[in-house]
Image (cartoon, rainbow, N blue to C red; front, side):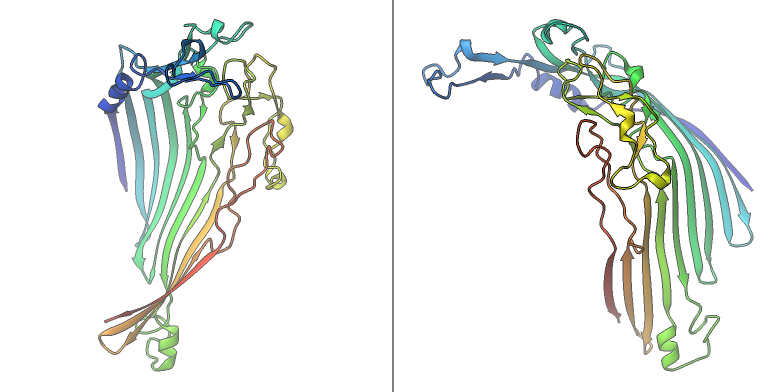
Length: 369
């Protein structure tokens, strides 16, 4: 039995391009202005192409804090490995990490909720969005990782790896930039369960094998030299967030999260492409408010995929051989659905209209000298 463990701290590198771009592509060096011409009465002339009376400026900029901090990750692990018989090894381990002061961005000039114009409710009136690049994001990850590996013996080798994991962060704020805690939830890449199996098996026929090892002639040529290999993957889906399109909050945003009035998760036997989750569980919030639904509270479709290869090697004389190969991608032609529609005020809300490629088959024949 072998016990392994480790702990480390890794600091995020500071990239000079980040601060350089803030200097050359934002206020006061770059201020976009729009001058709208009248379609029926000319009001913009070559002698005065930018008339002050028509100037419509929206001062948007980006910034970094003067006390820009160093972000870092802490990683740790503990695992146990022991043999199962003579050719198989089992690994079981715990792997975790914590991100602190990670790089993110937020609009520090977002309007507050309430009456009045959007500009009057901004901390700095007269300016549009001010995107602050800062190190204020945090994350944590915990997982159980298991692996069973059979080293090549008797024509068979395989590796089967299963991971049970959960990742949480607040790295993608998409609603209220003044309430970062409301954006804490499952990471967008969070996949709770994942099982991957890779395998290769030489069929037991032909010279040196269990069956037909002494046979000759056409039987050996046809039945010997076959090998089956593949990769089979099962996983649950990634996290997704329902959204309401439009400036419902009256803060200049293009969307907000909805109000969640029920769980929204359908039993497995009730999910299909026409209704992946309970759409009645999400409603548009009142005008001038944010929704109470959390970030990444639903799961997209998972994965059930079999990629299989069948290979036939045939010797021709002493120095030549042929290899016939047929490859099946998504061999069982299982529907691998894309993400469902997550726009609450869309007629397609909760439906899935796309899928990944179905079964594909490729053939190949090679001659080796």
